[in-house]
Amino acid sequence: MKKMTFALLMITVPLASIISPFSSAEPADKTNLSIVQASQYSVSVSSAKREIALELSRQYTRVLPVLQSNINQYNLAMDADLAFRSSGSDTKALRQSELAIREAKGLYTHAESKVNTVSKGSLSPSLVQFRLADASMLNDWQQGESPLFAFEPDGDDKQWANIEAYDVEGNIHLLDVYKLPQRPVIVIGLDKQQAMREGLAVMRDTFALSTHAESQLKRAKRQVSAFTAADQPISTTVIKQISVKDDEEPWISGKAEIYGIVTGVNPSRDEPVLDIIEMPYLDYSGTEYYPNQIAIHWERYRWAAADLVLMEHDDGTNYKDLATALLVAAEEILKAYPDPEVQGFAIIAKITNGIISAMPDAWFTNDDDFVDVYYTLQEGETYTNHYGAGGNARAFFAPLLIQPR
Image 1 (tube, rainbow, N blue to C red):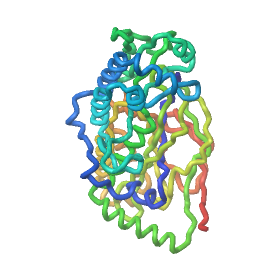
Image 2: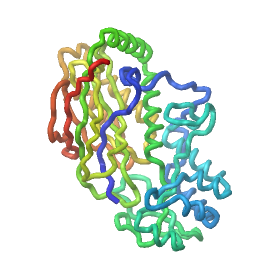
Image 3: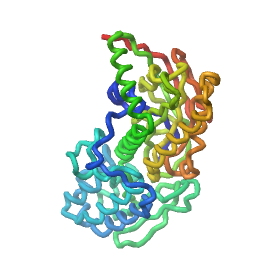
Image 4: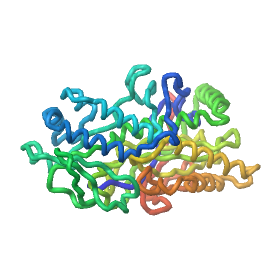
């Protein structure tokens, strides 16, 4: 399967959240919402998925009827916890492994969050899925052919020697990285949309806890109030069309989950602004998408200019660490210029480059992949067939003025 390696950014949230520099509202109650620090984990995401693969191989006979009832040509994946519980299988090992995954990714272990529907203080929704690797395997698997249980290795996918998999007896098999297996394979993977949604919530909360977050939030609320009272139109830029180049990716990785980071400077004081945007439709390379999605709200940015950093979610990123590194880098760059007005909007590119440089080497492998960047998008401008700096992404941006009711 081909997966695109590109990213853009914007999360659909209420207007007040977008206007605030730190998209979501107040940070959640930390008595019910615990983040695991990266330094505390010792098990990688890949190691945790290996344990789940072995557990599934042991309990496969019991779980099989549930999987076959739920996996079909329209839906190749099923929630792992639901599969185990519905079949009466022991979920202890699965839950322990999922907790290790949450720890490795810096996600909340309990959730009272807008991205989840669980009640206060309860366990977060399951992240782990069982996914049939390809629709072409469905018939043989439904007819009784025994599958293998596989998972993505750690590290750079360009350096993978093979894909590790297990059979129902627990024997190990080494599969080709790029050639789709003939035998059915059930992939132990993450619900990438859920993982990214939770990860971006962690990033928003981290941004909101920065030094000037409270004053910025109060100021943003005043700006929203004044804006509403003035009954002025809202100036935005939308993504009318977008695509990325076709890159060969391992079959086990599945479809992409794309997001982006809009970077700029606060219009009322010398502080960086980092906004996050989800692009849940942008699944495959070599495909044109026409989202008509608002990407930038211009009242958020000084000089009517901003950059877009393009990212793709993969399993290995610790979102708490990522958010902290980006925020520190942006703040340090801006502190180096006592009078940003002298630099003007050229300083935005320096902030963006500082963010990119702050990413550890691992984030350019098979963690959240940097893919491309759009420098100096300006308010009111139309960009047709506009390539990112790396030539990987091509988009059509257009201004949109939203009139008051």
